[in-house]
Image: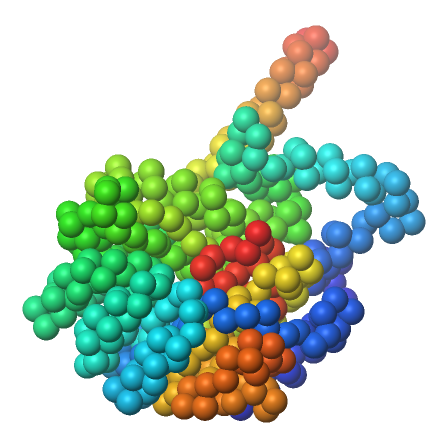
Length: 333
Length: 109
């Protein structure tokens, strides 16, 4: 389903008022506060086709960020003290320039995050990334929808769970997630494996920690709950299973006004594979570009205009404001 | 219109209508009784699901099945909890046969 069709569906749903209307009394318009995170989508190619993927990433996708766009991201980072660099995809490892980029970004002394599905790390072609990540003190975020194999594999594909577990073991063996002096950090992302919202982040982390240690002997630093956003392949799933309206209603009924002050778009700038700028990775997949008062491409980066830009919102934004709130770094409060 | 509508679950938050003070007190009690304490939120959600199933409340079954899923509780665990409730209900039914048996023994020649 293309972006316009998705937006049309989200807008047509008669079961909820529009997000713009909902937040108008709280914050109108929603404006960025600063840029604390430059989130770079290195491409939509992925070796997996997860059912919850908002990117609809997969092996057949051809969109890959070029070296010139990555060079411009580095130029922006060198010129501005943006504290965190967050690399996502697709599978970022499938971008041929990722190793070079991480080595360059690693010299900038910023928080450097890579969102990896971990299923490639033990394959010969990609195994060098373990050293690249460790050398540059990359903080790894990996999606593991459940600590039980059958639930993870139903969402992410056959044998994904085992491969992720084996990769975490390999990362643990070099100090990731073990709390050693190297402070190498691996965080797990929990997304519900179905049409429901995540529960308490602390409670779920407690369950994962106990089970993953007892069953597989593996360690991780933190767990973050991310609400599935009703776009991309997850939207297809909701429609196919007749859960779409109920899920949107659940998001709407769980709206938490206190999340508005902390939603990630207020402090994140998202760069698409072709350099186009967005307020978040979700807007990126819906082709909802930055508001016209600010530059719309990384080549025209202007920190002053972008730091205070008006945020583009739509009904999928209920996903970030439901319950405890949701962001790429987990619950909001 | 059906007697039970799925979307009516969302109306639960409005039950304080026309009796605000009692409704407010109920929700304070409800929240305090269902949040994690000496028992975890997980354990309490399984208890709530079991009660919902035994009392045939479609709203509560919907709400607590979803909550159990959100907390990562497996289908096996939920089904075990429902069986506990079913066994309790069966036992409660059977133990009441005591009254019946006492009456029969008293009245039958």
